[in-house]
Image (cartoon, rainbow, N blue to C red):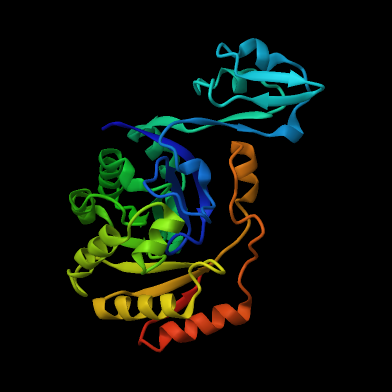
Length: 304
């Protein structure tokens, strides 16, 4: 597949793998994690962001919208998403940037043109390209083609995945991935389904398969989001520690504190954020979790 749907390309990223990186975010995800900080990446399709505070009530978007999905009452702009086809016309005509279309169809050549502008920074820092999401494996053919193109140009590749994808899709990309950032969240399957909308059975199976290559196989860093009241329980941390240690070849575990940076995105998408009142874990709690994981002989890093 020569085209994919991209919702962001971040330059000079330092938290998505070694060195200075360009992170390409692909749309679509099979999970719906309660704490997701990229909710705009869940849907596979393009969608509209509504920045209510930017609206100047000029009415240009109403004229541009052929779906009759927009209304302006007493200077307040509203978007009826049940009527919106996601064509993006309103965003093109909005002079204030109150409407933004999220999700751009791009070719491999277009993405590579963005990536290759930063090659000098990869070379100097030991960086490269990270493909994230959403879940990048929701666009498996585009992902594989993009990874191949990067490797042909000798650009270091990282895939940030939750592993909730068919095993054959993971096997197809594995030869072109220098490092996997692999998310683990909850070991109890019922809890996993409750808070992410999907089972963890395939996720654990895929991680076992990747790790089976041993020290000479795939480089893997496990990432564990620390979400107070959900993933930070002692039993969950201990079960993750035992499981990861049993794999024998995980480079390290990154513990990532829950943050509220993505909260505003829920408002722009007009969807409810169930963790609105959740606060980030304390430094003391993060240190305790690190110590618990280290007790299993694991190398642990505090992520950003």
